[in-house]
Image 1 (cartoon, one colour):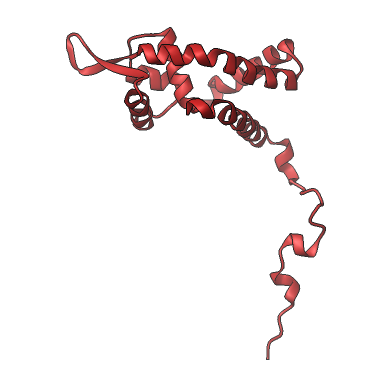
Image 2 (tube, rainbow, N blue to C red):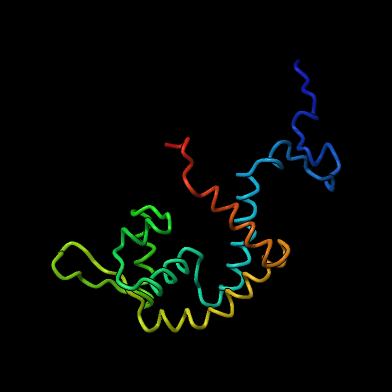
Length: 167
């Protein structure tokens, strides 16, 4: 007869103190892990603040780009935002279905469409200006104010830009 040690089947919480902090090991010093956790925190706040308008961060980004660059082609918008073209189509379809943005044919190119905000999309962005300011303000305060925000954005841009070693 084989007797198994029952402790092998227990979870860490059952064995140790369930209120003890979890040791994340080297994760606490990895940029990628910290960036992902920061993104999760920012997106969670965004979702709470924008829930009433049913807007997601990617949708908000597309609307902002179209507000400042009316008539761009789909491929250019998706590239500017770092969204795969195959993922951009359903993202834009939702905005179009909601009447916030529209495709218009490009004269002289039957295959291409130019993207524009509708008046409803403009009105939505006007309403969201205060919401995004409050959302951004919460995180600017967390990092230590406008000067710290500028420094953090500069560092993040250095991570985003391709490195000569990446080519």
